[in-house]
Image 1 (spheres, rainbow, N blue to C red):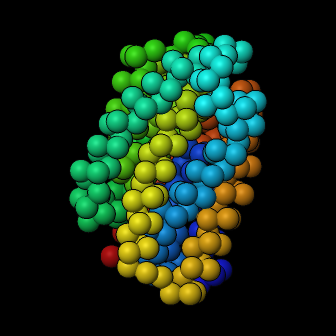
Image 2 (cartoon, rainbow, N blue to C red):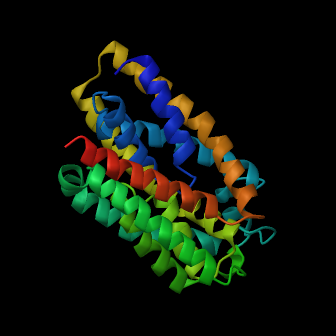
Length: 270
């Protein structure tokens, strides 16, 4: 993988990690479509580390101080003013996804990272997101999130190990079904995703460190991480502002078109 490819994939990761269109699907499909060598899960994990940095930077500003400072002070001044109570759901909602990722990593890598599965999952989740936005009340703010929501959104997020499902997409969908406001569902999705992104990235990067990297790979990994971080930051800002005023319908349409194109191209290549 050369430097230009790493930067392009970093842009793709930054564009698709927070917008509910599945970054893992795009990171599999684009190299396949362009006939590039598959970069592998280690590089995918490094790109997720880039978008994790974007998430931490964004919410550091949004919280007007860190989560830990709010915990120390016990502040109730903003949506994490219940930071002591929100820390528990963030951890709790991550458990199903963490278990699924740990137990099924090999199975997903062998059997689910295929264009047909990705295309189908992309379309199905898009339709589910459309239904959730239509039937959900979209009235509940972050402060109303309770144990029932943690369980539903956490279990839903576990499905994101399947490429094409989209971690943000499935957790936003579950949040909408729970009656959360669109932007609240997106923010909670980002919050509960951060520990999983961090864990997966560290796990894969430790394996890379053990095996070692060539000098040109180090540059490619660094370029991908930085690109994903910068692009991801602006995309996250865009999505939260967008969902305050508009529906996720445009992403539903994109998912259906993208998924259908992947399936058609797959059968054309057979």
